[in-house]
Amino acid sequence: MANGVQSQIRKDLLDAFTNAGDTYLSGQYLAELVGCSRTAIWKHIEELRKEGFELEAVRRKGYRILKTPEKITADEIRLGLTTNFIGKDIHYEESVESTQRIAHRLAYENVPEGTVVIAEEQLAGRGRMDRKWHSPKYTGIWMSIILRPNIPLVKAPQLTLLAAVAIVQAIEEHTDVNPGIKWPNDILINGKKVTGILTELQAEADRINSIIIGIGMNVNQGIEDFPIDIQELATSLFIENGKICSRADIIKAIFMNLEKLYLLYLDQGFLPIKLLWESYAISIGKSIKARTLLDTIVGKALGITDEGVLKIEDEQGVIHHVYSADIEI
Image (cartoon, rainbow, N blue to C red; front, side, top):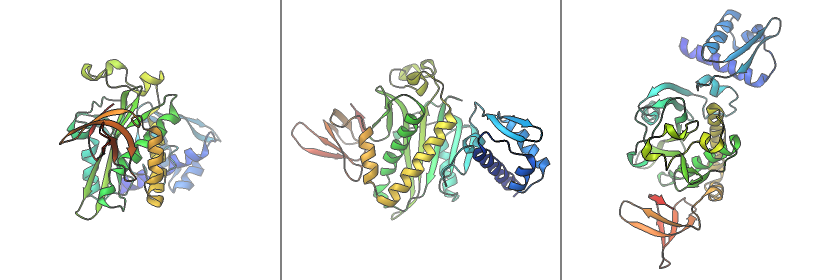
């Protein structure tokens, strides 16, 4: 219980600093705002300093935050976050086997919708079809987001496409690069993969209990940070943009865009998401090869259906509907 109270005080403090901008906040004001003593406020300020926050304290004025830490912390993500539910509950870990595994456990424990698991490093990160995802420390964004949409089971794959749009929008907001989406779950820059999305379900025969969206984004790696066997295939925002990016800022942008699109989707259905997705798609109109579990289809990508299914027209003019496949352009 005590930990829950302390966590709430920390959240309220960061919300106050977020709303204050460059304005100083006095210890007395903060104590009254969050309902604790000025001594307790001072202790929380010192804890923030230990996390890497640079805070200025001026007598008779109060405190203000000058700089946030290089390392991602849950507090840094909360600072400036304006979502209603995505990212409000953050489980931060220094090193994990996989954020997806932790998110699955938390989802079974019925944590609130929008709960996020974030790690600085994954030792067993994975993508679709259990492919390994290289997740080195302090360089990328490795996280899983728990959603609980009241939608039919067959519509679950649409959340992957929705997440892809939110991620592309976040990258555009914080870099000068132009990312594109390769159906269904890859974000590419100049033909190289910068982000992968892994969407998994907890469901019963007739309903979805939760959808867990895993996101792996290469942010500040140099080419030498990638294993040799993927250096021709992978890239990072730093490589493409030439600048170190704030991972916390990108995470917040993903949360805000994802929540906005998710609420739009629940209100208006998939069509608005489809139009946005197609505007970022890099394969439409191009010749592609789709490898499914049963077959390989070669033809022109026509786009996606109103349900999010990929349409490919082969050389005989037959249109194939592809629900799951590896795509090669």
